[in-house]
Amino acid sequence: MNGIRVLLVDDQALLRHSLAMIINNEPDLAVVGEAGDGAQAVACARTVRPDVILMDVRMPHLDGLEATRRICTDPALSTARVLVLSMFELDEYVYEALHAGASGFLLKDARPDELIEAIRRTHRGESLFAPSILTRLVAHYVTAPRRDRPTPALRRLTSREVEVLTLIGGGLSNDEIATALAISVKTVKTHITHLLAKLAVRDRAQLVIAAFDAGLVRPRH
Image (cartoon, rainbow, N blue to C red; front, side, top):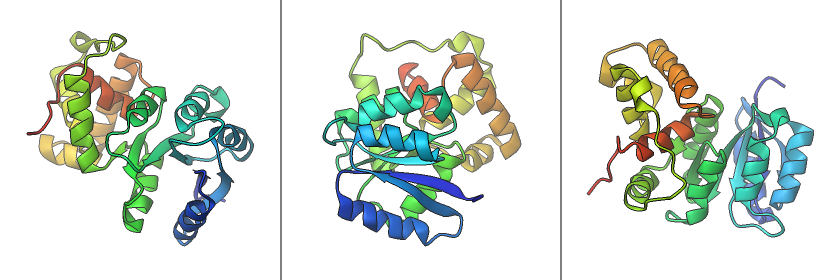
């Protein structure tokens, strides 16, 4: 199939069934596998090679954090992107999942259309953060120092790249960044490619974290 291949990971079978019905109703999306815990998720991902993995956090045997880390460090799964689903806006596991390589996260009470758009954006390489979570995520990284937080090499960035990184940290999409800076979307994508290389990060979610760590984004009050 030429559509977006989705793997569902959640320990609640009823939720997986509901998500599958929503996803399979879209012509460009298809559920290619399901898993009830992290260990099954890793094994299934290696078998079905999904494009996007909807990952629950708290599961038996192996949690979503460790499953995400194993998937995102597996060279055979380099094209797979993990979108974390959480019931909790302030779930510490979600922050750690981003460090493990997840491309973003969404609350489980999101509307069906938000879920579908999140899958498509994740597949396109754009991080997806619920607005309420993004504000808390920024606050968490700015106000909670971490001994293992690296400082991005901002001196290697051009002034325009710093501007783009700041807007990425603010949760803006490529189209929104293009509008804000009065440049083309193609130019935005070029800047993002350069940012990924210069900061040695895997994807857009890691750029968001880099913006937090550099102090380019501040919590909203």
